Length: 50
Image 1 (cartoon, rainbow, N blue to C red):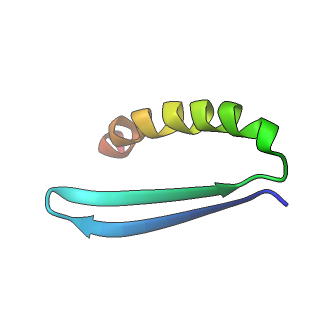
Image 2: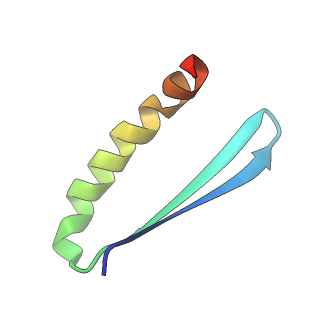
């Protein structure tokens, strides 16, 4: 099973986002970590444009 869970929490200066990605195969972890890192690095800019 491949499941992604997002949790949002109030933080002192914004919002804390907790992302949990459950993968069926441990070999997929490195690629998923890199991909999510890139997505989350750009999240602030995308939200600011909305």
